Image: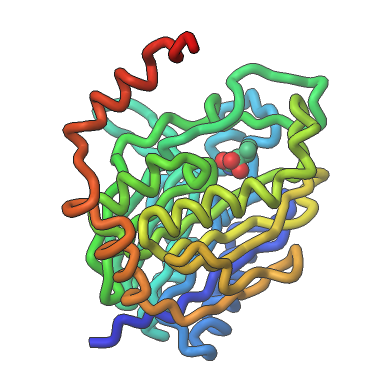
Length: 312
Ligand code: CDV
């Protein structure tokens, strides 16, 4: 069986507040058809891809907030995407805002589903690392209200056997945390896929602005290499309702090298044939968990590093 998965990282340009879900789904279907015409096995869409990234705005009205969320996946509006995937025989990943009713409670998550080439859901991830704040900061040019609008994901970091390999997901801010990659790679992840909405401006720490692209790549290149996994990262890019978001949709090999990257801030496919066997030198040689590391010694290292430094 082939160990090569041809992947399309489907960058989205801005989604205006005035654009309907139906129109966005049509945009995604067009990208899916284009990916299939390039023989892709999997197309990865971004975080909360169906709407403008609403955590950038203060929303007080509960009904208005709910209008950004999906109560079903698939729903009558998103079903055409699932149908088209099954017709074309291509898998996909879709990021969306999820409104769930669990144990009699209403819960909101920032989620993504992995869907097989039969149009059936393989698995779901709920964003674990939520950036931003809960309070209104009207002096900032835009808000970052994920902590207000979402609950922390409660599904952990699962992996699935899919597309001939082991696949795991994270979402946006999760890519900056080393534990994300390690939690996934400890469960065998050979391919880690994610969508992101990353503004190019940090209202409270503007000196970070010029480092946005650098930090974005730094964490994922290290994560790919240190965990022997392919990383596919997909942006919502460009000027969305006054918020500029970085592009840099990219595919990173287990060597840590960026092998394909977007050139625009619009809808754009970044395609690469990812050979899962390229994970082998990293998983079996450089970072062989079983042979090269001894977690029972980590306690000793921790106590050594937390001790006071030598006096001379
Ligand atoms: N959607 C995100 O998680 N965005 C964050 C921003 C706010 C820093 C990110 O880590 O890219």
